[in-house]
Length: 430
Image (tube, rainbow, N blue to C red; front, top):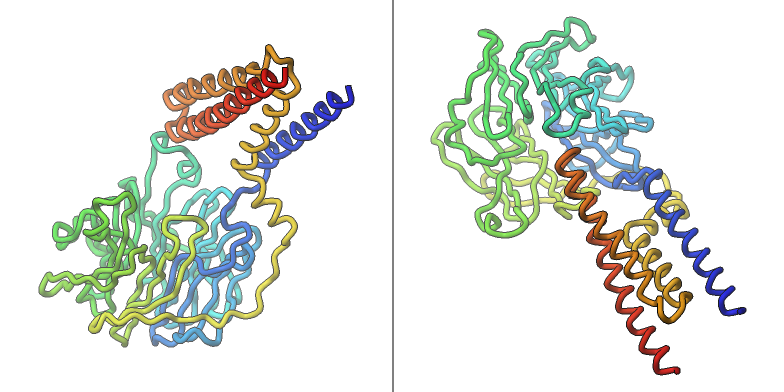
């Protein structure tokens, strides 16, 4: 009798832990960057090459910083509150800095501030989601890509509107929509002062918006570029393009790798600048040095993304790391962090398995397989539900339910094996 009470107590305790873990996973903030400290995405270089700008996570708090080109004299120039600041841009005269602010719904707003961080002002409307922005050559106008925030929140396939190009003055006045094309994506905005054009990437296409003719056309060199290019940027002298694309040696593997390439717009030749076996992010040209600043995505494609700040010499292809002399950073709440990391799908699976094992021990000999059969039924019903969800709600949600079903079935196999061993042991004991 005492043994039964102990088993019932253990079952109740494990069940309570299981319910608590599931509730915590459903209700807690599962953001991969919640406690992260390290570089964020987006880089910028001032016109005189003396300062670089970047985003940096400090215990999950992402702000904009500036530093000398050698990584010294680091200064924080934005003060986010429950948002992520990223993708900085220097104004041509170096007096202003532009950046994006992302809220907990992943909606990005456009902000401008003095280069020291003073007088931050929001330029975009709350109804807009901004994917990128650039200054004009005189620094008085900002061009940015935007789509309705409500459309961005919708799942793939439900969206009715896409991205378009807008302009706004640095004081927030005279906002104007320049295109009405609903582009699927609008990335890598580059302003060309010489041609009065804005170059941007829409999925696999390279487009140009002519500011004088107010029209969009395909870039002249678009057909000469690889099919999958990312992080496109134009050199200050407008004679070459830097971009990342899939390396040939990784095309036949399960994980694509993205290195940095340079295309000479005068002779059409393309050369590979890096061979890092990872992913290159956010390349940007220095103005007077024959170098490119970029981020190496060290743990590609995991999250949170861990970056190393590097430069590559265009002529020699020599790589150099820039070590940032970051100021003292906030310490994390180690207790909450430990709980957050310890409660995950593996924890839930383990508790579920242990609970059913205890129930298997508790039930009578002739019902030893009952818990595993119930678990099998739950797993099969969940698997069937995954197909229904995928067909009627969302394919990605269906995949998520399918993964849950797979986990349940794996646990069920373990419980079946345990029940079989229990039956043999009880038979042997008799």
